[in-house]
Image (cartoon, rainbow, N blue to C red; front, side, top):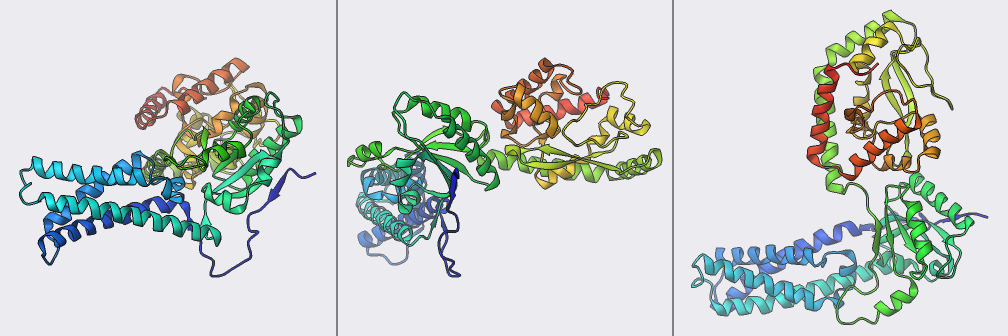
Length: 477
């Protein structure tokens, strides 16, 4: 029995295939809305005054109305993919946002005492033309999306689909695309009563789904299970927390049937409930990446002469490679090779790795100095530049230790919800070095999870500053 069905790449090859990402639809429509409001502002002025070229006042009026409209539309989720697919359900909201933009524009002109230059007649015409243009544009774009969906042109977020078999069998490819997602792999679960939890076979499939998400580089999980099965949904949510990916619960067929009858607004039955979100959003991940690249590049450049001296000292001190490579697990448990200056006479990277301790006779003479000053960690800046690590985050452990402590500490796996770091909250809290007892490792994990749950821009800077101060104390060994 196979747990999943591979669907990606099932469409026939076509060199001229159109591939439209749902991520760009919102920004494109926002740009079109802006152009439409500026154009209708000029049109209203021309109709009312009989003038020729669009005046600066008309352009300013259109831009002000567009800015307010886009902000209101964004707040009301009118640029969400689900809203763009079914614009006919949101015509009232679109007209409201348009009129709000026009009224805000009038108010700004009034406060600037320029209301004489911008007459009430132009304002009324602007409101009418703008409303017609926005509604017409949105209906046309909605029709275009439907056209693109039917021709398999739309590419949504890459998802691992998990759901009851009978729920999944009723989904067409077009239904899935209308959700704004692209199915990569699906896992069918057994149907159960409302009070029944997941079966043992279902739990195995969920674990396989998490592994498939890693191997297929999926963006998120799409869950389609009866909403009445509260126990199963809760258990499924707990299991998916082992992955840092977003998990969304989509309406089952009964809920979709009810929602589809709602003609008074809303975005029909293509919405989802977010069961879990990543610790950091796209903007926050971008900030951390910029910080990583900046710090790693500057430090490597400034310390290049020191690194060359260290290479020579290691070569003269003992036989063996200069760089020690060991398997570690990073974001979402993806393995990578961590780089360190060799400080020991052994190169352990197997099923059993013995942690270094004070007075360890495996540590070389030069290695002892490198460890006390943390210079041995500097090659990891290359891991940072590669994107395998971050400057600040939970310190990565040897794979053997991940396996060992993953079975002993229930929340250990959550450390992999962010990239591992050169330094972290645990290290600046005195939890660095050998963990002799399980309690010491639990304390380190607790500090790492606190960092993940309380991350901020300033927290990274604070940890970096505390790290520099700790290095002066030579606390490592």
